[in-house]
Amino acid sequence: MEPAAAQLIGAGLAAIGCGAAAIGVGNVFGSFLESALRNPGAADSQQGRLFIGFAAAELLGLLAFVVAMILIFVA
Image (cartoon, rainbow, N blue to C red; front, side, top):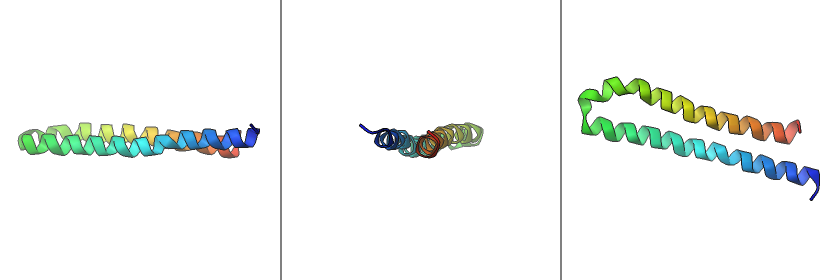
């Protein structure tokens, strides 16, 4: 296998993390909505955790994107 082909395959595998981040964000917001509908009084106190979970999932997606770009353009 040529190095350029291996580089692009590695970048494609790293880009899977972007899709996984979208699934993670959906899980975070879906769980929040489910809990908020079950107990509306506690929804305000859980909103901070919602944004922390969202930020963590998005960070992993951005890191996967950066790794893919590094593999394509730098390595």
